[in-house]
Image (tube, rainbow, N blue to C red):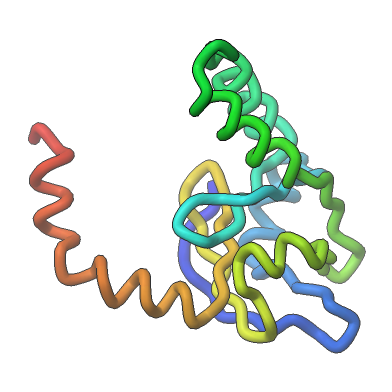
Length: 145
């Protein structure tokens, strides 16, 4: 549903405009509400409402008797906020999430199928630079083709 990578900038009022392709995909799939939370690798995860509820069901099934499950759920869900884009497709990311992802001005918005990832440009470039050279090795290890 969401694919590609886009460089955008946080405006003076702290808003981020979603890429036109993502706005079109959301509109054609009747998505008007998103949830955004702390992601992995220093980025933010953004899910449609339906996908958020799918993820929530998976994580709620983790055993609360396991310390790692409790810790993950606390950090993941305590950072979650409901987001609705304005008529121009802009969203306001809370300051605590911008701080978590080291987002200041330049932002990479990455489509990862069922979710959107929001990265600071610097962190994305570092992640991409470190992982692109081993992309084929990772594919070989993960895929049983």
